[in-house]
Image (cartoon, rainbow, N blue to C red):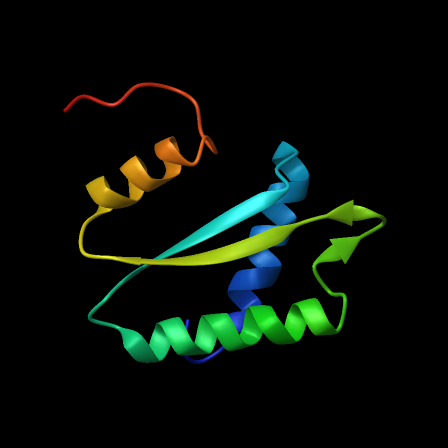
Length: 88
């Protein structure tokens, strides 16, 4: 993530296009602030250069920082971005 964040963005865009997603999430643990900064800066630069849209197919990315994957899944569920149920 820190070395070449644009490679991750490109890979996520390819996958999103293949499955029809218009939004992607990058989960980063809070112990890696340099990775969070690098990804957020790369996403900002990609937006400014209109690189997150391909053939009028919009795609947006968000970096989510947390302490555990469980909290991230709760965040996604509360924001109505994913469907399904999770055991408590």
